[in-house]
Image (tube, rainbow, N blue to C red):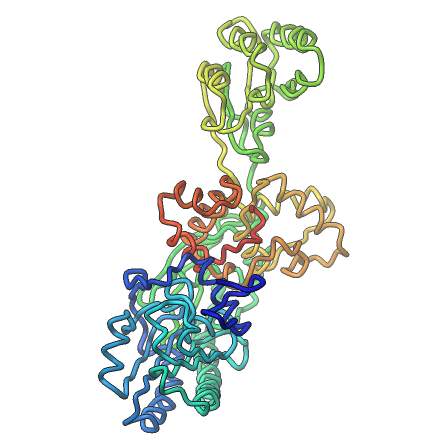
Length: 548
């Protein structure tokens, strides 16, 4: 029941922060009948920066609450339970029956309104009493939750919660939790400073008597020698941050990185001992410091079908494969604007010239009455070389698919969201078109943001973005702030690894195809709607995503 759109519990209207949490819980697909199976359990690091800082403070809090009927719960930045203590065995049994176990993921997207997930989602301290809980099984508890922020960056490091049965609520627990969180944040700050020292020492050691390009990244810090900065142009050392999630805790990570402007680098990375997220990156070698050569046009069959989403460069690819310097481009859409007989005459005249190449653009737009004419040209070996461009085969009508199947060769162009490794080089080439006499370069943060954008318009959209950037005053550097707001992403999505980016793009594409209908999108992806909501939350896919 709700009043004026505000969720209510019985006859009482929920407080605004609780009402907001209920709305989010419904959006995530959480049911009031809590499904314990929805709570995932994963590994947590007992030596993390958060646990190292919180341990002495939690020990003191345990002493204060010993003998009471309360519990202490601590979740990490992923809202996963890393510490739990119970002052009463009965309370411990009740919470464990609900899935409150070491490593449990207790976000709003899994269990609804609760004093770990709600502060994590809202970034604010909350008190949740009895019926204010969204899940029926939690309505017997009173909880006090407070986010733990990194004092330097402001990012959420974790959430602290004190929970008891609803008849044990205490107005003093809110201030108590706030004070304890302040103590933890102070120790996080001291730990961060110690981590900074480790990173700097690792950088000194890596660059001692060496000319190898080196960068050390961790937290918000970047140390890089001059050789590294030079090698990573036209990007910058922060581009390496996109690789951090892939660096293992032990061992060496080796990969190749395209930084744009035709530069491809081999990168070797390993973790900094004693740090939670620090790594040393060494640029092993550069395969090229100049622009990549443009490959010669490939020899093609007499008839070629080139498919892909709009904006993937179908016409450009057809021109390159035509085998002549200036192929004739005939637009199928023109047949919709003029007399079909006139269009048919022009097409017949063009293909009757054996030594020419004709690009029939967007054949899927051609009226069905003209398709037999195209089929006849494809079957006649004495006509011109014919190259057709079209939408992907699964989007063709049966009549167009029948014509397309008669082409001797088929080329499928991948959408830009599936070519993220090529994006720096593509963007650099487009920039050269916009700045023919200059050489601007992207910062690593800007490139990371471009990699997380879903690019529904493919290359056309990328070119439009770069044209917009080119209208700004020229500084030689394109940073995150110069990108259009829709392309900046969030700090969360800019840190996703390659596999997570691919999953995020698949979800966004399915949502676009279903026009935002999440049930249809979930069916298309082969997952449940609840799983879709959870993955959207984990991967930073929101309802205002550009594809929706």
